Length: 423
Image (cartoon, rainbow, N blue to C red; front, top):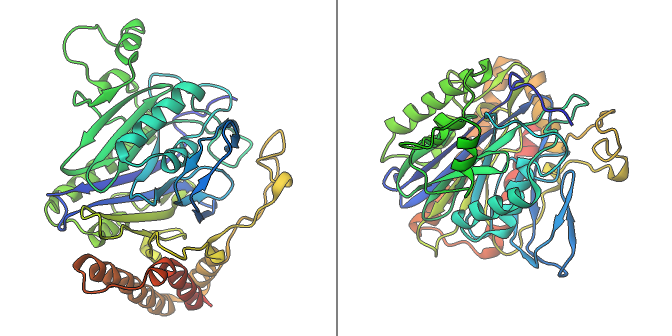
């Protein structure tokens, strides 16, 4: 399968705050998923499982060997594929991915999508560092590749990842099967569709430097700067735009050093002036996520997901891994089995309607209302979101100790209430 031009529109932004940058003793993770504007993103809960030794697992395009035990995960994903743009597991590991193009060519043929790697890492990892090693191992065994959009014209890229848990975060950046990783034990960090790891490399592919030297990209002498060595010499227009978003994100994080909260992250994700909240060139922010991962292991991690496009016009709804967690049907897209265009070769020759009911209600409400009605709707959305943030504060301070069943049904309750608002 031919790779797409790096001029093709694509963008995403991931953010993390590790104490002392956070206002509270917690790691705070955030991501905007910017995708083709009509693509539907669903929120899917997958329970923990045990699997038969030697069994195989079907990902978006290829099969991989399954592991004997997988963790429960909550995923925000383009509804046509197996993997996810962002998500978390029951142990407090969060991951977001982004497209990147480097001097290493995007290989032809179908392999694991970056989004498949993300889900596999969440299902198989107990820490962010372990997730780095899971992705590195899968890259080495299966590689990455395949079209990343639901369209007959291929759109292929390599991936960068931001990974976080209760104590630290990691940035993992790839170029084909090669990779470099950076550990973040304090402060704030963001990534934005470009290589950003320079000389501060905490772990790397064993052949990273020898390959760069063999290709004539690095002399083999002096300091090795991963971003400098592997970045494209002539950056395409879209990569230049990513640089501006990256700088804007850095500045917003720096201004809030020591006072970063879930609300601060939500505000950053809603920032349109910087392009972080995107709506241009056929792409838009199709879903968003903010996670609060307390360093105190007795306190639950709280993950806020929108399941609808444009965070400035959406509700961040809280999800907690607890007893009684179930799949809200309102944020689950329809399935098409063997008749799905992603399963029929050649792929993506037809289109199907993947809209879930919350997406339909959200888009219809925004499309039919005048300015005054939209202002009233936004007020109702903000009120609902504030309830979720108040619940978070109560859990972190210990002022609220809801029953596990109540915590497990929290996301379902918020989805139902938001759905009623649009109705």
